[in-house]
Image (cartoon, rainbow, N blue to C red; front, top):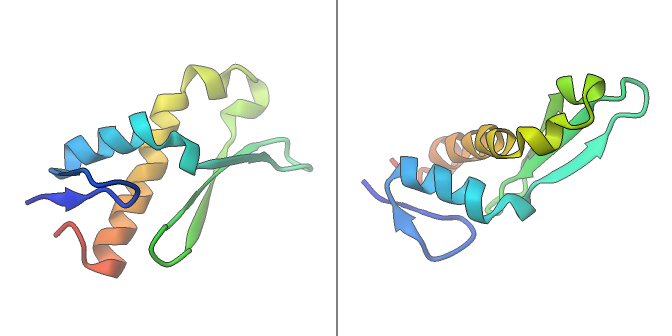
Length: 94
């Protein structure tokens, strides 16, 4: 079954779409720092309904290079959250 990319015209299987999102749409994620804990916070927002999720990146606190070193893996985790949301809440990609 094909799934439409929520950001462009690509329509493909879920695993290819997951990699596509991480490779092509990383700019759709937001990163910030939690003042008290010092953790990096990664945020993904659904382009369909505006719901968003924060993912604390605790290891980034101890190692500032963590975000650069694991950028692709971080994007995969966040876009996985988005794809599950889109499938469950918007019934797309079933």
